[in-house]
Image 1 (tube, rainbow, N blue to C red):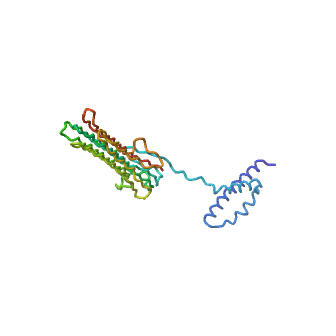
Image 2 (tube, rainbow, N blue to C red):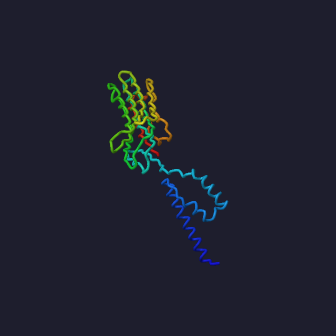
Image 3 (cartoon, rainbow, N blue to C red):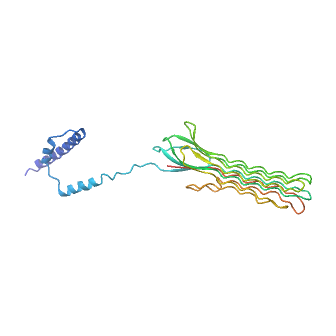
Length: 303
């Protein structure tokens, strides 16, 4: 037997089958028939039962396509920053909170023989909340402006003599809003407003009137251009009225609305109010105490 001739014949048949398979594929795409293909294929060896089974098994898995891979990630913001959309991302999910309002300061006491305490400050309101889906452009920039907490109300001064009223406590400042803005168009996509500041406690008045307690600040609100879930922040509580010698309990700050993720400690909540000044045993007036500042806003973006 001529082995070289046999090898050449096998290579020839192999090349023929490959070429004819390519022609058949091209013909199928163009809708044409290749009349020579059946005859040519008949020249080669018939597929074994094992090959046929393997082809059938392969066909069963054709529908099992690998899923398209998309990038996933998460960013959180506690201060102003820019979010650049990753390549291939067209939708992001955002949760944003506004900043909390500051607590009101306590009022000062009087110093006469019928001295009275100053009023305590009210608590600040918590920032509002919004949770929504935004359609974004890959690689585009979006400004994330995180609201700063409201300032604390100042303390009211004590009466310097028996003929002077106690000083009023200062109101707490409102928390700033948190926003996400499309940089290219300067379009605001969502806003979580800040909570209101707590009212300052009033100073004690001559001859024998205790200072008025401060009121609590309202909670902020949320809104998004695509709707979503919007919640109002918790309101600060009012301060309690005092006695003839002691100020009432100051108001407490409102709490942040819940989201999927928890906010950092101290963020979003309203500040507590400061207690009013009390009357000492020696009828020495005391000044009030400043309130607490509100917590900053917070933003989480994931995709």
